[in-house]
Length: 120
Image (cartoon, rainbow, N blue to C red; front, side, top):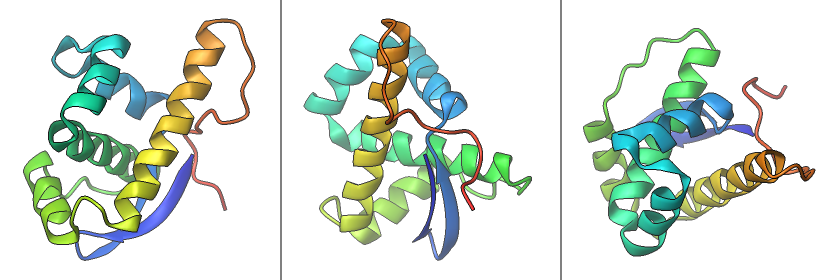
């Protein structure tokens, strides 16, 4: 799943493909179970990281320089507010992509799996 959103003062491609999800799951050795737990117990940590890895993956897929840090993403979210529709949409997209990959790991099939390429 890839889409363009205006965040951090410019349009950015956010991609929740396999690479972004893998990096997030590997963040501090969280794994899938701990990521899910943290998403429900502390979205103040997970939301910026989800957006960071999605934006990082989007920039890399477009051969763009990653010109931001996770601290910048915290600032972007603070400016937007946690209940901003942009953020809610990104978290929904991430969750749908994650569910698709988890279904694949279990041998199921899901249409909500993300993509590592930008949709045109």
